[in-house]
Length: 483
View 1 (tube, rainbow, N blue to C red):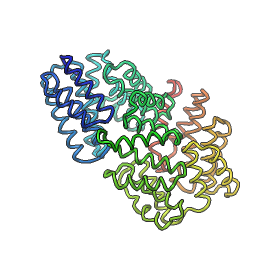
View 2: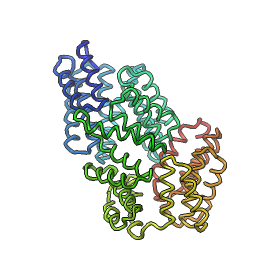
View 3: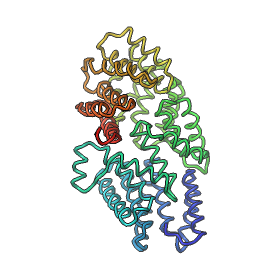
View 4: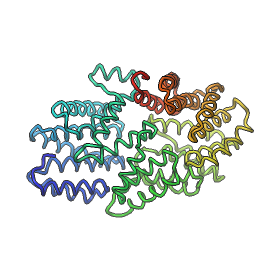
């Protein structure tokens, strides 16, 4: 990172260790010392900007975003005067990637796109100038995964503008960075793990990669939070809860930065475990504490549901009314729709049972989920919305248990069921999971056919953006003949 002395390198490594432990105050003090050294300013300001970037992602506070861009501007001025080495080009590319992500977090998508284009071009220059420079493949891999997972219409436009990429290529590049980076191996492993968990159904070892980072940094609230989140996403709520508790507890200590999102996901753990009073307290804490828009709609909805499941329908109504968000993220749109339905009518007995079943499944309590779903399927009218939802959830449960043929039959029954509500997600997601079963069985041709059938569903159904992205990623992971 343009350093020339052992003393500067020692300060850099100390500052990076503080960053990865989320001791941001200590990191900034160390990096300021590095910045004062003759050879240290570019490396120091890259990491000072990164510290502010992390704050802005977590808090969504305008002053943290302003601090990031101010430090980023200083870094780029320093790099203008630096020799054009692979490290200098890489620092600029990484910084522009952070700028793109920061603008996207602030929902300023035109600026995010411009910064992303600049970052992409800078990464291309690094790889062209030094193809053996492994650090660059973190950013390159992220771009290629993103491009490969976009809808085909957007990918065609990007190709016209000179952007190329595929999921398969991007994941390989991320793996290269995680295995061979000299300095940023932990960050590359983090991004590889999160990409696998979020976009690839945790099929590529993402949970294990995040577990390894947590083992390497057991006192870091960042890695406790991310590993806990990955476990929760993978229906292991009982294992996730202690990690999220650790992240919350560490954040209350003066030396660590507090991760608001850990409070939300700990509350969601309790909600899925059926501990509605504990979930209520956690959601209230998050809604009071976090000033940004992230997860607010879901928190308000699930707070209302936690209250209604405790028999406090009147208290719940105020929170259903509070589910207001102008954001277009899948979770916000689905939360608004569900809140409107709940304002119109309380949960009926079938809906209560389905909520308990969904929570039990999401927590990994499969036996409880099965009992509840069997009861709904035995008593609900065939073809009714609750019966169709129960069929879908039954399919998900037996799929998770590895009973593939029975799961295929359940998903097929969902596809045959009436679909009076065009926003219901059960049919398109059943079609996607049919593809997942074929992929798990090694039948890539049938998997590709099922994924394309899922993508053929039209309409603004719940979580349609997530389905399209996951189906694109899944298609991109198949052998070329299956694409």
